Image 1: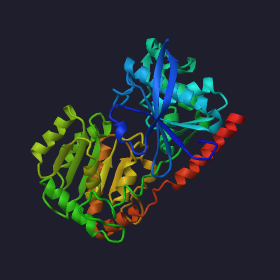
Image 2: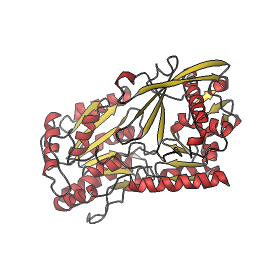
Image 3: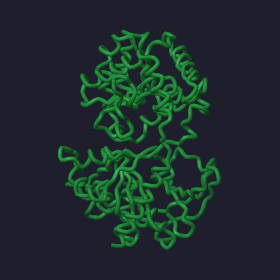
Image 4: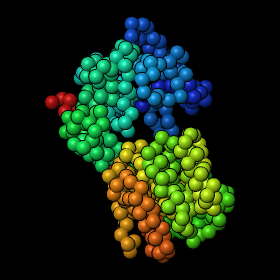
Amino acid sequence: MRRADHSVDMVSPLYGHIDTAKLALARRLTKLELELGGRAWSCELYTGRTPDGVGLTFIGNEEVLLSADSLTGEGEQLDASRVGVFAAAVTELIRQNASDYDIVHAHGWAAAAAVARLRSELPDLPTVLTVYDASHQGRFDAGDAESIGLGDAARDGEGVNVLKGGLLAADRVTTLSPNYAHRLQRPDNDDRLSEVFREIEPKTSGVRHGIDPALWNPATDGNLPARFDPFDMEGKDKCKAELQHDLTLPVRSDVPLFAAIGGVDDAGMALLAKIGPDFLRNDVQLVVQLDGDGELVAIYEELWDQWPDRIQIKTGDDEAFRHALIAASDFVVAPGHDAPSDNIQMRAQRYGALPIVHRDGGLADEVVDCEASLKTGSGILFDEPTTRSLLSAVQRGAAAFANNKAFREVQSRVMRIDHSWERTTRLYERTYREAISAHAG
């Protein structure tokens, strides 16, 4: 956060899939000359501003950043150089303008490297680190540690753990869910960073992110064949019929439509596939959007071979289809989302679909379990990440759908839940003040 005008600046690595020539308002600013890993690096800076007035700075380097579409953090030497160059460039950029900044807020494991560097090189600057998914840590061999340039705090056995370095260096740590923060700190958490999360418990909190009410709004969403709102749900029925028709499912309003969205490496999607044979024996429909390919896709295709009138699978990451699918669905099954990185449960509620989530997972903070009469509740919770528990939950959903009038009232009720960023903004402001106060103390 800049001190001069109390605005917020965002700094990001410039990956190869971003066309700088098409960046709105972007302009080349200057270059940064760095020393890292025993060699010199030159980074270009591009600046711009969002329509909302948020300042943007993109960091580019042809050798290591231009070729990157993403960062895996799973030991690739090139990723180590990418993270190291980005963190060093961020630190140097802030060093050159240190008097302008009150606090630095970093997001994700790669940015944790910048937090660790700032602690050692600019120790008077408070920092906040937000963890999206603690399983993404940035673990590299000891030989790559020099490419990242972190101190001993990031050491993890024989190698280096980027997230660990950031967690220990930050003045405050947040996750996207209070429940997820609690999970990370529990004694039965056997993750390799579990002891670190318990150690930093006093400075860790869960701050729920919201969703963009302009982007996720069924009353204005251009991806939908019909619009609807909590007081007129006719458009949702049209969305359902249109999707059923397009996917060659029987066009029926009297059958519950379940959606599931995830990747092929999502344990929850694998769990849902396991209950497929038992679940699809019921009078239901299931549409799966699966990003990736491989064995899990083949398992779902086998289910389609047996029940083509009850299940359809769409592969790939199609954002427009995701909007249409959630709008058409009565339920969104998200059984494996321990880390609430995409707020699928909020999006489902916003579009009148009841989320089905694990009671102990990162999505459960916004879901109150519906009781039998459906007079209370905003979704369906299941107790254990097992096939038996998940099957029971989806069958509860099908039974709730059969209570037509009460179910429509639940749909309307969950659409009116406030998932805006206003509450989040207040919580982050408090977190910033705590970080600044802790740092000063």
